[in-house]
Amino acid sequence: MDHLSTLIPYDVLKALHIIAFTAWMAGMFYLPRLFVYHAEAPRGSTQSETLKVMERRLLRFILNPAMIATWVLGGLMVWQNMGLLQAGWFHAKLTLLVLMQITHAMYARARRHFAQDRNTRSHRFYRVINEIPTVLLVGIVFLVVLKPF
Image (cartoon, rainbow, N blue to C red; front, side):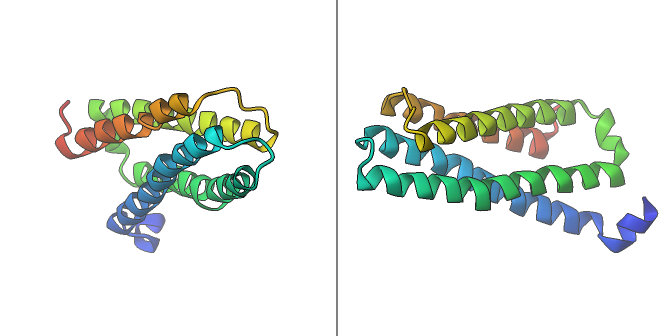
């Protein structure tokens, strides 16, 4: 543990973790917005095919790497500060992060359905699930900043 902390100071890990989480959230806000447009586009249209490319690239090159970096950097922070595991707010934050991970997986599944022209959901459905990351983000930020328990 001491070797890691001299190699990568805790505050540097925290800054990188926040950057990775911000990138993950940006993708989590944007991908379902693309799904809204995609659900409205006729199958096989130029718009539909363009959205397929955009969705795949967003997931592959931004969302997935940012999500992985968020978890890895967060894990390294815990490794350097095991006291976090004793904090109730941290357990609540992890619960919300698991829900964010489930939402991410749900979005990845929806992207596969769109890629195979198998989407059965309406644009209204995607407008609603677009709000899930926002609610989770609010909870996560309040827990980290206020540490209420």
